[in-house]
Length: 172
Image (tube, rainbow, N blue to C red; front, side, top):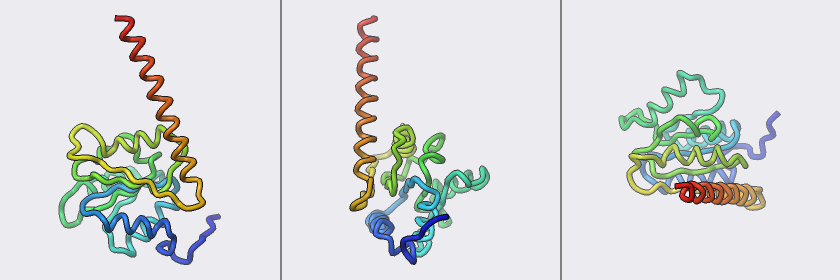
């Protein structure tokens, strides 16, 4: 059972921060969230704000996933401005780059692979310009700890890769 802390999702300070972020930029945006309930609430808030968006998460059918990606990548009048997904579902196998240079992490998990893969959905060969990633950090939440853990895992991974490269250079 899900415990709701706010009468309306748009009363949630995290959701309000997301809306401010969305309204600060023109163009296509990607919002990543850890939980299905986050996706549901984000979608409700974006609908309330009349922001055209699509959702893509574990329970989304294959047909609806294909339609969501197509609607997001389309530039026509029926296109979606915002792609909302969980990194676990949408973090691999998708190519969302092009006109999308802004990414928001509404909520994170400790899964570094999901994070790195989700970052790669918008930052790939063919990306135009710089991609900016923003993490929402709630006061008194575990967000800072999670980001520190993710950063530490990336540093460890880079260190290991550096050692492998050094070893390969010595082998030549």
